[in-house]
Every structure is written in structure tokens, then in C-alpha cells.
Amino acid sequence: EVQLLESGGGLVQPGGSLRLSCAASGFTFSSYAMSWVRQAPGKGLEVVSSITGGGDATYHADFVKGRFTISRDNSKNTLYLQMISLRAEDSAVYHCAKDYRGSFDFWGQGTLVTVSS
Amino acid sequence: VVMAQSPLSLPVTLGQPASISCRSSQGLVHSDGNTYLNWFQQRPGQSPRRLIYEVSNRDSGVPDRFSGSGSGTDFTLEISRVEAEDVGVYYCMQGTYWPKYTFGQGTKLEIK
Image 1 (cartoon, chains in turn green, blue):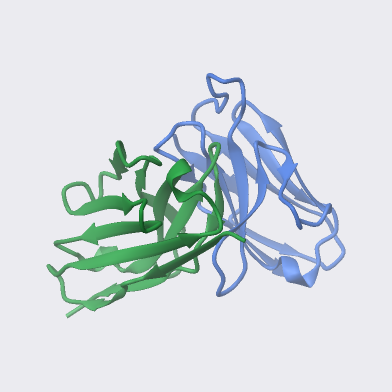
Image 2: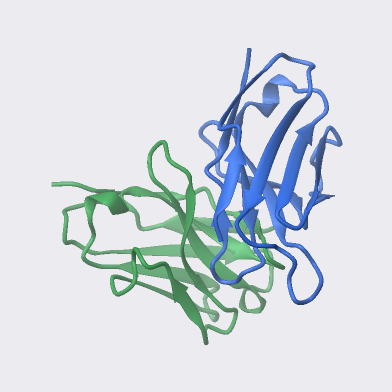
């Protein structure tokens, strides 16, 4: 059974940093691209960052470029999102999602990030 | 690629059909010949769940009252008879242009 378990969210002040983690199980982690998708309160879904299975290529949406870094440790079956210079508009539930053939076939339950003073 | 859904709000009577439209700003046929158009359901308080992939393929466990259709830039999710458990927000998403996957705005389905 595929499981994705996010952690690391919390309350942080504007300008602060957080590191999110996503522990994966139930599939060959290194064989699949992974993404972080966020959802601000009452809003829709948007892809934040993506990374290939081997970690050799990454993508960051323009609204986080230069502030967020996606990475993975395939030996630990874990996906990360390092977030710095956080802004109020980054407040959202952050989901990790498994990428397969142009789709997100499995999602984690999400971790809440709140940026507020 | 911009994904535009309509309607954004969909009140439906139990047992009646429902239809959601999704239009993309560019064609979604990939160079491999497949069309990576997906539909997700997000029930209140839950994470998104994929219902349909590659336009019309239902995921395991998805009731057959859900169906997807379309081609090119126009796609539709249909529910043949709405049940109470179908309440939530439905999103289309294109996965043709990796890594820039994009979602529609979401359609909120509620029971009249």
C-alpha cells in the first residue's frame, strides 16, 4: 500500500524558514518523480516544486523560485522541501504527491504551514 | 497552460446527473500520443483523490457513475446519478506539460 506522510509544518514568522519532509512507502521511491502541491485556505491546488526520480532535475514555480528548494534522499525514501524567506501568502497545506504518467496518483494528507507574526 | 473549469458551483439534486467542463488553453496531446487530463475529487477535510486519468480511465475503487470524456482542449467529467458522498470540490489537471502541471480552479458540488 502506497503511503505518503508529510511532516514539518507549523507556525513561522514572515521571513522565517521551514523544512518539510515526506516519508514514502509501498513503492520503489527512486523510480518516480515527486512533487509538492499546496492549497491555501479556501483556495485551489497549485504545484510548488517537482523532482525527478533520481533527483537530477528539479522544477520550482515562479512564485517560490529562489526561496524554496526541493530535494530527495532515495536511501531514506524521503522527499524534502526547504523553504526560506517565507511570506504570508505561502500559508497553505502542503501535500506531497507521487507523479506517474502525467498524473498524481497518490497524495499525502498534507502538513499545514502558517506564516504569521 | 491555463485550465478553465465551469461551472465553479454546481448544486445538484440527489439522483440527478452532473457535468463539469474543463477547457485547456493549449492542446493536451503529448508527443507520445496520450492525453494527460486528470480529474480529482476533494471531499471536505480530505486530501485530493484521483478519479480519472488520461481523459477517461477510472481509478480502482471509483464508482462507475463517474466518467470522463473529451479531446484536444475540451474535457468533461460526468456523474450519472449524484450521491451524498459526491459532495466536494472537483479539479481537472493537465499532466502533459511536465513539470508545469496545472489545475483548474475547482468546481464545488453541493446537494440542493
